[in-house]
Length: 355
Image 1: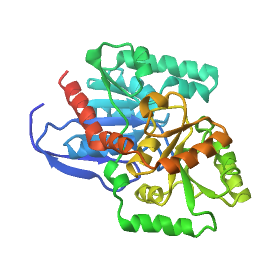
Image 2 (image 1 turned 90 degrees about the vertical axis):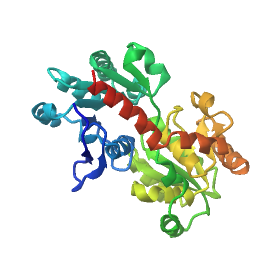
Image 3 (image 1 turned 90 degrees about the horizontal axis):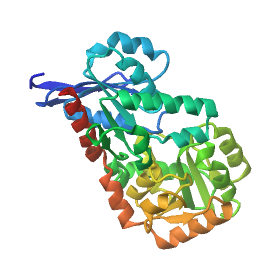
Image 4 (image 1 turned 45 degrees about the vertical axis):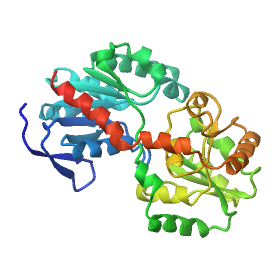
């Protein structure tokens, strides 16, 4: 493949335009298979794709569904690399890589234990086997969790450690108009001015139920829930029962930073040191409450830890307010800026094309 000037592009289903930037780098055509997530949640793959586009790669993202299998087989030879993000994307990528002349890369972002905690044992076991097959067949595996390294079981030459990606500047310095829109919306509710914010999925693994019950302890605070998932009805009912719970649901990604800046403390009750929400809170300059567990080794001294009980959470929220935001957490968030992470993916993808 020779060096020549081409416009890199990233294509998103449902959007009418592509992002194009002229580059003198070798064009690499990437088919990125990602799992379905609600709009506004887990958008890191789209952000990375956009950043790669600006670097001269051509990235087409498809949601990994059974309906996409036919399209993958029909069009796969239009690409140099297939990237499959766990869970569904890695499985579909494994199928599409059979007989494929290009490279196959697994983008491994979630540990199997998270899936096993919320799925039937037989399904978790099946997914585990499929992922291990994908790891073994892939030309390269990009992973995030250290404890998943043994499952990947590949030589260091074919494995790269990455990290979560956030749009640091967007959360650190949103436009004043964005903050004002969020603040105006929240002020429409007759609730206490001190605000605790949760951003992300609404599922049992995120301990939404004890978070909601915490608001009986924090009567002088308002909980702002920004997310979507299977527990939406529970959150809606809690918001109807208690005046100090607000549930706007999912908000436009452009406005999310504004909501964070309009709040006082961010919270995460999932036992995981790799969560975008904590980094986004830190970038926005919020003190953070994090459930104690695996995250302690990563965030010791940067967040206020708690047990997953309403009493402990309430105490931690008050302590976090007194402690204030962490400069170290903000610096950590800056290290996860999308451009730094995109550099890791670009290096892997370009090297795979040279295999």
